[in-house]
Image (cartoon, rainbow, N blue to C red; front, side, top):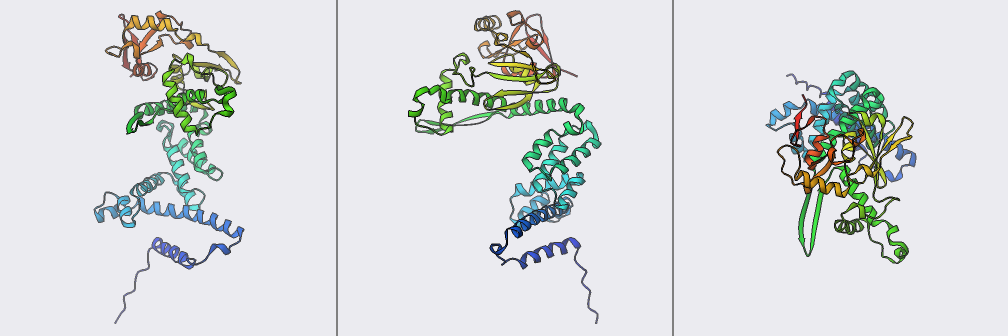
Amino acid sequence: MSVATLAPPHPVVACAARVGAALAEVADVQPVFMSVAEKEAALVELARAEAGLAELKARILAAGDDIAAEHGARDVAAWLAHATQADPRAARAELHLAMALERRAVVARGMRSGAVSSAQARVIVEAVEELPAELGPVLAAQAEQTLVGYAAHHPPRELKRLGRRILEVVAPEVAEAEEGRRLEDEERRARERASLRFRDLEEGRTRITGVLPTSVAERLKHYLQAFTSPRRRGSDAAREERVPQHRAYAQAFAALLELLDPERLPEHGGDATTVMVTMSLDQLLSDLAAAGVIAGDGEEVISASEARRLACQAQIIPAVLGGKGEVLDLGRRMRLFSKAQRRALRLRDRRCRAEGCTIPAAWTEAHHWKPWSAGGPTDLANAVSLCSHHHHRIHDRTYRPELLTNGDVRFARRT
């Protein structure tokens, strides 16, 4: 009578079993008796092993369509979430990473060796796959290799920042234009997704929640900082009760609504809530570029087209820099239309002059038809009233504006 020989388990199944057995061996071992050096070594090795296990799990997930088919699940992530009582969103994120690692062999090898964590891998994959397709696979592979090398010295947050600037390393000749295009896309999405909600909490209070474009939020924060500056309180500062920053902001916001005229805002940083936009001469002349916005307590980056749009209005001064950072031209507020000019403009235009738009002139912004940065004068003959939507559109490179004989502006998508 013969005894059937059991087939050996698949190597991956055997590996999983050995990992489980190894963990069982130390289940009751207390780390409190380990030396500092032993704890350090164990934590580092466990982190590397964790990365390797995550890569192996990703490999199985990427090949797991048959599991979903076997159980009638939407996909293998849905099955895994149910089988292990895991968070479905986390399981789906793991599946997305697994599919990406199929295309990113260098990142996968980095995880397998323990040199790249799961969090770093997600950042690298996102950065590489956001590169313009027209740059080709060679540059994408070079970017991937470079970022995997950076992973040895940078945590995910820093790696993400490096990933956004990776073209400056692998393709500096196109980096500026691509950065400008990326920023324009981000700003467009931010405007499309912006929201502001009001919820009555009764008892005389309302909760406001919102998501705003960063350039808008930074400008608001700058105004609120002007109101909450300790210098405004003078000699009474020591006697005033300190309040948390979020409450000070709330009080300042209420005051801002009562004193909305920018000319009457308190001084902040030596000037009345002035925002400076810094651009090089090349950036100023380029369709696609980035610009710096110095406001509040730091510098943000916006697209050059957004900077040119902002230069049409508000307390914003454009500073054009030379190759070594020297100031070639510091714009003046006289580029802004005066109050009398704005009144005359509203009286003349009556509404947003975009063809077919009915937004009243009181809600519009004054636009230089010939840009101020290109020598356009600040006078009524060079001015046109545009609502916020059409003011953004006239600075959007995907549209070509045409000034009609009746004073309206017609927009056509560029081919």
